[in-house]
Image (tube, rainbow, N blue to C red; front, side, top):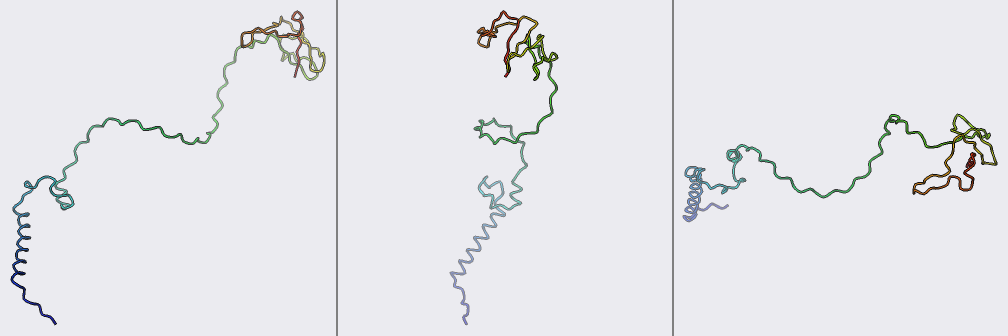
Length: 171
């Protein structure tokens, strides 16, 4: 078994120097240096205790004013079309429109007779052939009109305008 040897004088002197230097630094930090002698930001925050850090941190100040608005961002892509919504309720009936411009018209029944309740300024109808009827009108009929281009177009180009009977063809 080994016995511990007696420490050499050099080891004893070096240990004394180590303890004095460590103790002296601690003593100087605790007793000889005050907080007013430490330069600001010379001790990193991770080296301070929580209590010291809390003591150094003051109360939050008032918020600053709102800064200027930044530039507008780029327009994003258009999103997907949403689902069709439910049908809304029917709206109110609109006002009656102006009277029509038809001078005369006739409603001819399937048996070839005139429906006078649904006819205007027509007194009689005769069937000239399949789908061809002759109407007797009770008012003068204009034989031409102005179309959407401003040209005057004859109403019955192949028939006589002098006749009081106008021919019409049903389809």
